[in-house]
Length: 123
Image 1 (cartoon, one colour):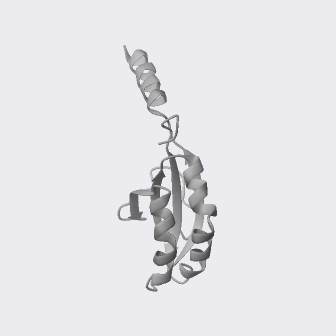
Image 2 (cartoon, one colour; image 1 turned 120 degrees about the vertical axis):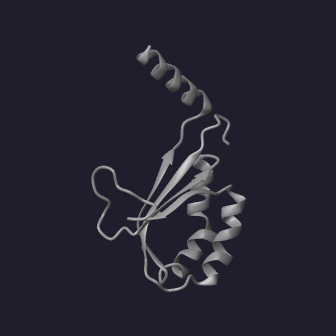
């Protein structure tokens, strides 16, 4: 975690092509993913493990994944690294990214403050 214990999350929405993953993608992306603390949180296929409760996903989205990093700096280090950028061409035959979104998480202190405020509202 960062100095503020504030994680960051990468929201990935895309579609698979049915082609097998090129092993070169994993070879290039896995070391920097491990180095920067990437932790897969969730992945699911739209219509099976992913249920849209309100609104619509962009057309063509077939899967959603959430990955956690210790901080926004770590997330950006991963994404902008030479290692990851060199891996991107090797994933393009297997899946297409509709969008990637980086989201700041809440620190433990923020979570506790929000929980306390919510509890006070229902009392």
